Amino acid sequence: MILVSVMYPAGPKFDMGYYLGHHMPLARERWSGLGLHEAKVVKGVSAPDGSPAPFQVMALLTFESADAFQKAIAAHGKEIFADIPNFTDAQAQVQINDFAESP
Image (tube, rainbow, N blue to C red):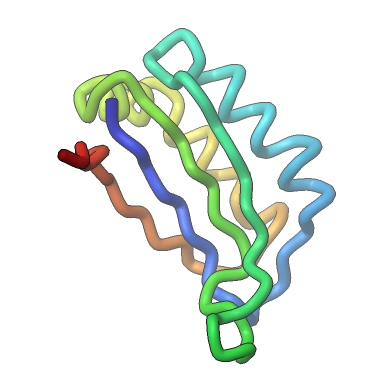
């Protein structure tokens, strides 16, 4: 399993209603059969010192494997990425993560 973090920096406009009501359902629908196991959305509240959060929204997508993620992107990435301007002007940062196992 891998975790794909899609992080939207604080500042630019972000339509949370559209994101939750259209964009995330679209991603789940297109990618669920291609290795997407779970998709969670978290909203940035603040940094530990109380200053503004560096990211206003993060999508946390659990995929079966990095290969499954790449196949999902190849199959439907163009459609999903084309939807981004409908909810934000932010440039998303994407990071692929492995789950660390503690002793």
